[in-house]
Image 1 (cartoon, rainbow, N blue to C red):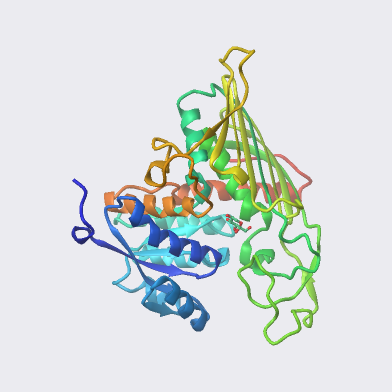
Image 2: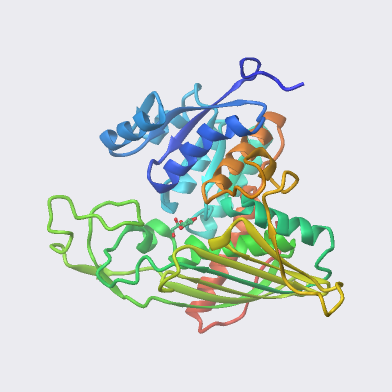
Length: 405
Ligand code: SOE
């Protein structure tokens, strides 16, 4: 029998950050209980942001009653059960560790941290907290796009046979304009790395998630095409905003871009597949194009986020004359997550994966089970990012990586 919301306990969430990721997480928390049985009732109890006015207007939009400007107040508040971290990477470790030590469940945006050392400390904190019932998860949201989750099911069910090739790219073009300013995503001390960590992390994760393989070694090249950018005021990191009181941010001059604009990675999995990855913010015309193709001995799958409700599947056991890639519309009730939504063919979007992420996180907490991906999985991606940076700094020198997690 399904419980009524009145019978369920509340999961009181403190949202740290209110920009792009803060908004999509807030929307996800609001929507998840309307479409999924969670076993708890998520309540957006508070939002935290440095700019109180901006945080207040965000809170008003999402019906959040409480606004704080110091995350420590929320992390130490007994009225908060879970902390959802949606701020730049340089703040992830401090907030997540403090929250876990205070017994809160933690959902942390990707990549887990800015450095390997931080990711290791966060994972340790998560393991210790788990022993006391506090659970941690890293937000690789695209895993929960139904077509990608279904691709994983096809691999799991043996429909692709032995995996030989993984081919992944994540292409954007939002900083091609040389006049685009130096937003936080282009500063190493805030973002950790550039395209590599921001979007490369997603395809490294997706490749491993879909195939179940683990990268055992990689080699990488990175490039920063535009070496300096004009200074600008605070922004979400995706849009140019004029410097406060300034003339569009040009007054302060230009500063060095300290992250990569693009990264190319090749790798070998512990299970014997070859993999290629390309992450760039300079693919003109490509806005948020994630492509993944996996070739196995019995078949292949291909996915393109610009048609995110579709998965292409080639069954190599079909007669040669009628074999070929066929388009599967991943909107059937028994496709992952799809049954909770609209009738077949009506389709989902970018934000639905965040709803699925919130739902899975809440359900895991209700059941006392480890949510996936765990911080340990986030750490394994961080090892790959770290190895890619080391390799790129050494002229694409091969780096063995502990397959782990
Ligand atoms: C910016 O490049 C960004 O918002 C990433 O940070 C997100 O993870 C991705 O989903 C969309 O692009």
